[in-house]
Image 1 (cartoon, rainbow, N blue to C red):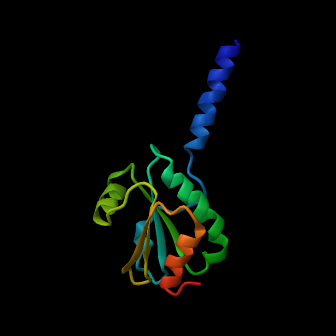
Image 2: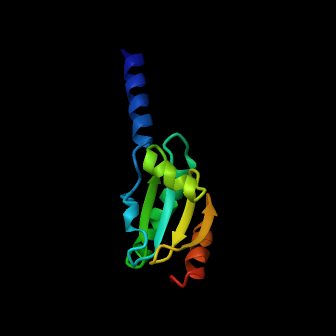
Length: 125
């Protein structure tokens, strides 16, 4: 009985850790619609993308009125195609201008400072 309970709790914890963090839209058609877009690649088989999304979530309230926060789901064909086109892997962040021009890339940024520098280079403060 105790072993069964431990297995159920462990499985539940594993499933919970794989749930998407925050409400990052996966609607990539929003890129180039007038608002800069910060796009993070996410593959549920790895943790880097989840860690980057958690960090970006702490920044969202400050920038959400000026930047679209989007996610590329590397688990579906559309996301895989987009990732190939932009050379993204789990945890990669790409900034696009309001007209859809690719401005810059961060490979698995570990600090907000890195992301802020990218946004600053695009005059998003």
